Amino acid sequence: MQLKGYPTPNYWTRVKIALHYLLPQLAITRAAGWLAEQKWGTLTHFIIKLFAHKYRVNLEEAEKTSPSDYASFNEFFIRPLKENTRPIDQALKAVCLPADGKISELGKIEQNRLLQAKGHNFTLETLLAHDEKLVSSFQNGQFITTYLSPRDYHRVHMPCDGTLRKMIYVPGDLFSVNPFLAEHIPNLFARNERVICEFETVFGTMVQILVGATITASISTVWAGVVNPPRINEVVVYEYSTTDETAIHLEKGQEMGAFRLGSTVINLFPQNAINFEDRLAAGTETRMGERLGTVI
Image 1 (spheres, rainbow, N blue to C red):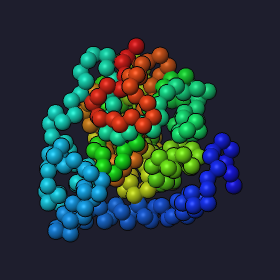
Image 2 (spheres, rainbow, N blue to C red):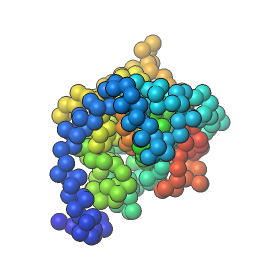
Image 3 (tube, helix red, strand yellow):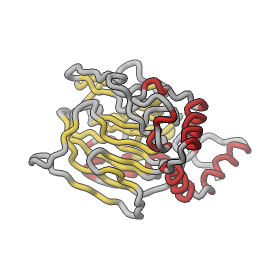
Image 4 (cartoon, rainbow, N blue to C red):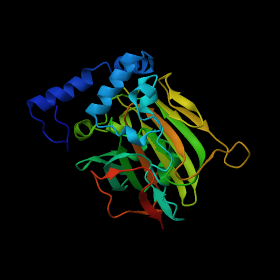
């Protein structure tokens, strides 16, 4: 069945898309998570070495520069970087890029719709699990979607100072989020499993969404640890105080979460909150800490 507004794929493209629908996503993801946690010594080091070579991972940036320094593949995958490898733009009004990767799309949220790829879109309502208050916060606002490939640094950082107000775990599919499927799977980011993090900032509400994917074995945050697994089949909302001693404050550039295997980060900003940097566009490579935009 051809989806309205989506390109008509050729035979082999249709086959590739169909295979992604037929894959046992959860079983594959659970198996990948188990394998990535194993500590098999020389075999683990060999796998890491092959992976780093295939994807051209720059281990010289990491605190541990040799494959043999990592006990498991997951330890390698969420490797911390050397201090000052990603300088944070400290200008008072600067908002920073949250992750290493590549911009999938960015721009205005028009009629509550966000671009997914090549002019195709999805709605704020579905992305934000129909949280009406959150949806209203971003009407006519702006968004930026960052894709993290297997070679990238997989910790996610704060684009600005913020106080955590809410975290929402949303169950969903586990389609891969690579550019090919972003062009062919409708509502990809709004149908995949995700963790929505709402922050109070100087320019209003800011949301940072960590989107799950096939073989993304887990998503974690610095305040809650591993959010998934376990995976439950219902939306779970966690509320946080922003005013007492339990309030969770994160500074610009501070780590806020991580993926065990690659995925996507989506940031939402209110209307008239920031101006994106002119150099940023779909396909632009990103480095955490560089300037995303400027507070208006």
